[in-house]
Length: 178
Image (cartoon, helix red, strand yellow):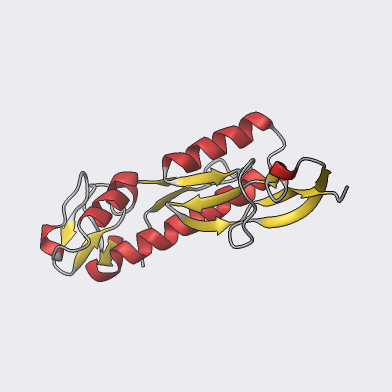
């Protein structure tokens, strides 16, 4: 099965890492045309086959730009492939975000995720809900109005268009008895 990714090989032979590019317009076209028959699925630089959709456009195929058999994904599975690849990319970005040493890099990854519908969850100041938050600890307070509220987000959570991907780990205010 063809991928919607272009892998740039190590052309210099010097052991440098390869890079991956994704053609977003192909994924968007597949999502928009999910309920349409294969012959009606069209998009910029995407060829159409009788039994499917070209998954890759100019990224794969022969030098003339014409699609080859390896570029065709059955129309029934095109959306599933795109969604599975998106989930993998989101998981990879969350992994990289957790390990980013630079605040600027972490911020840029978070902005990129937000651009595709994955938002950070920082519930500071809201009532602790074990269904949506993970308690990492407590902090004592004498103020009764703070009891049970999230004092601080220790590890940011993430949701994908409302679906919780990772619960935030939080510190919760706990009222000390007088």
